[in-house]
Length: 241
Picture 1 (cartoon, helix red, strand yellow):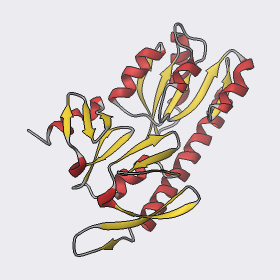
Picture 2 (cartoon, one colour; picture 1 turned 90 degrees about the horizontal axis):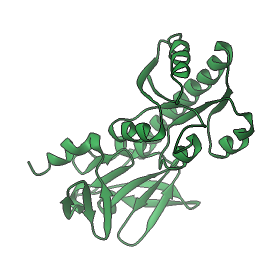
Picture 3 (tube, helix red, strand yellow; picture 1 turned 90 degrees about the vertical axis):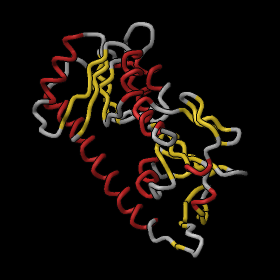
């Protein structure tokens, strides 16, 4: 299923998009937000695959909202203003629909998303298969090769502090360096052993044995402070309850 969110200050726009989405059996609505701040709150609690985003909204525009996201999902802009199209594509949106748009044009945009998500899932699966050709030593350390900075680094999972989503990339942190990888954080979350690593936020995976303190909604690893997402609070609480 493709989980989608509508962000638009016009109720009629919500009804139109919902009606069009009903044509697709694999689309599941996660919520209706009428401004960017409602959307921020919803995205703190749950993840979505696709956002239908209006531009001209009160207090915070659609693009200002999009720039605030550290790891945005797919975005289809739905707006009456054609002059912002270039800026939209510079923000890596998937499509730009001018209101009023037809079902045919809407379907073309959504089918593009479906194809893109299927391709990404397949690539993530293939990458996981490659990376899980790991070497297990007597000390139970595991190693794999990570492409970053135009090099292939051999990584020992025991050296990883935490991983952070960085747009369509990830940052992998170690005691004395950080490597930017082209892989998405979901690939690492699936690949790394669950008894040693935990996803604590939609944008963060931490090494359990590197955690020094847990302070409210933050995890302390050395000088680093990692936020705990609302959805993951109960999982993190299980570490000490």
